[in-house]
Length: 339
Image (cartoon, rainbow, N blue to C red; front, side, top):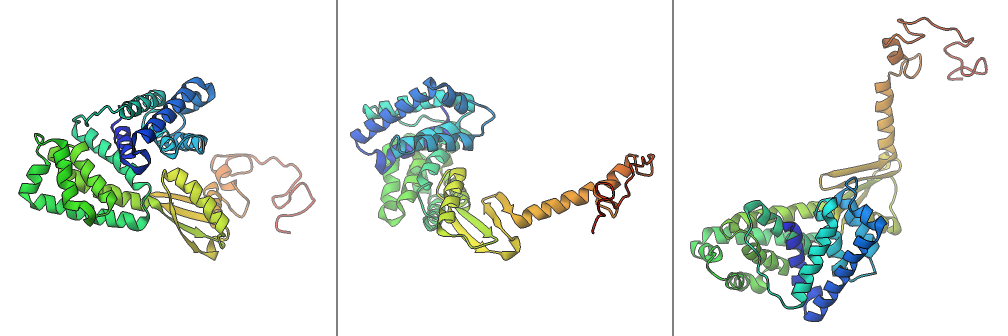
């Protein structure tokens, strides 16, 4: 199965919303119901398996559909599964998810299987996405700093590094070492991520995995802050609507940093991570200006230069056909341009 989905599932199961046999049984039942729905509803099945629909769109569609109809953890898991795999694999991913949750609900203990370097990183990355989704930006900064410092401690302490990377040492024992070291000294998210790096990643790559997690947290922090420039004041309702839409796009809650720039005239310009959305009046005018320049605006009118270059009628390369109007006329003799 997809390593990222495997890690994400492990994180949800480790979280407070899925603690206890009753909660896990209910979670398994909800996900099984969603799987049956996707397989039996022709329109939904077509939407989820349409290769023309991108992962983010599939995730947003399923999250919106399931909101309020199943538990929040079930909706998160199913929506993530829809975006984590190829479109044609969504039904089978939901089937795997339903089976895995049923096994956990029935008390079956399945330790993480060894994976290659890349797949192990993807699994830890999926776990990290689930953990980081609910954190505020300030918390992300704390987790980033604590993971970095923990990685340096492990790298500088041969005895500790040897214990945490010893594949012959049971996973539970290695987890206990991390929990004893960090315990209440670090943010709970830091403890969870560091612990899963030990058991879900490759043991020999622990320091590298921790450093890679630092980069993931930094990236998540960038995607969680949307810098919004607006041509006008943005009221509370507009802020909520924009935040909700951007959250669906990013796959996690988004914090808005809004500044008013009258030069934009109207609309908003949004930067979130490496994505920019320019929906301002100034942006539209600038794009129109570029279009006009590229089209060849001259004193003779829009597009005349381009037509002349290709020898169109009325240009140097083609004979002019007199239709009874002059260049300055619009609609015969009814008026002149600029009058």
